[in-house]
Amino acid sequence: MIMFDNLSDKLQRVFKNLRGEGKLTPENMETALREIRMALLEADVNFRVVKQLIENIKAKAMGEEVLLSLSPTQQVVKIVNEELIKVLGSHESKLRFANEPPSVFLIVGLQGSGKTTSAGKLARWLSRNGHRPLLVSVDVYRPAAREQLKVIAREINQPLYEGTAEEKLPLALASAARREAVQSGRDVVLVDTAGRLHIDDELMVELQELKQQLNPVEILFVADAMTGQDAVKSADEFHKRLGITGVILTKMDGDARGGAALSIRSVTGQPLKFVGVGEKFDALEPFHPDRVANRILGMGDILSLIEKASAEIDQKKAVEMQRKLIENDFTLEDFRDQLRQVRKLGPIGSLLDMMPKVGMLKELKDVKIDENEINHVVAIIDSMTPSERANHMIINGSRRRRIARGSGTSVQEVNQLLKQYAQARKMMKTFSGGMLGKKFGKMKLPPGFPFGQMPG
Image (cartoon, rainbow, N blue to C red; front, side, top):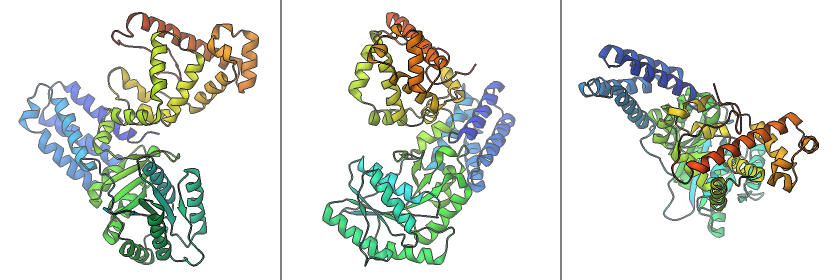
């Protein structure tokens, strides 16, 4: 499931219908606005946000300049894009840091929202972006919560302040963790606070005391995107009683509607700072309103894809791979290494979601990705000898049976991989013979290469 999938499909249908009209009129514009309103409401966007958004779009789109322009539909898309960006927050809202370290971040939210996991993900993100975080759990009511953070800290290789036997209260634990950060040169203290199944006075009093004593630069509310408008309502209540500075929205990869993301900024007045897009500890992304608006309208998010690739892909290997492709020296071992590099970027479905859904790429949203198939491909190549990986032509029937046994797959799957690999080499040979190194033309992948069937 891809975030904003449903909304994106419906909005693109609206724009397609407008293009079919040939000319914009007040009548067909009203129809389009009605369909956009329904699409937003069905995406679980807060009704007040929808009302304001439609009013803003209508005020701009019904103007004479748009109706009489040479490309009225593109003008409408531009207006919708601009208004979506405003609703989402206009620009990326970065974390704030204290002038004198350590900066204290309070991580707050309801029980079960993914608060503790988000604290770990944020610690990992901070450490990969030049900071030295220290984690501490002040949930003294649930030993399991503190143990969970301890396990997470170990997995992400980040320090955790566990406290002493005397430090039994949240205030004592948090204060001691800040002292530890000063002594050990840690510049950010991430305080994972207690949660409840609902908002109550006892919880709020405790959080207000922590806020007063620690003077945090960030109070980050963690909300579960899957709960939709309940997440927005909780964020608003926390803000009114505590004064949050931003929101981390978890499980965005599982929410095809996206109503919470589109509502939180307008309802609370506070920015969405990060979104959780998977279970792995590196699956936390800064929230970019303009990029998200582009994705909703099918324009893709190439910048995020480039940033992800720059952070994860070995540049020397990439240059070497480019040489091999040009010289048609692409072996099965190279193919396997490429798959491993791509896997570092996260689920293939989320990568395809970043591609523009226009022109020859519009069918990408229909590509069905079986992540297990990638594992099978890697297992098959791993079961080959170095000489077989270097020269696929020597892989005869008996070798294929041995490779299938070794990889836990079937001979048919081995045959299919070798066939697709041979097709890819043939394509690369044709490509490098004429266009590669001169000018890129349209490239049509062979059916199913390398992950699954292309539609149609």
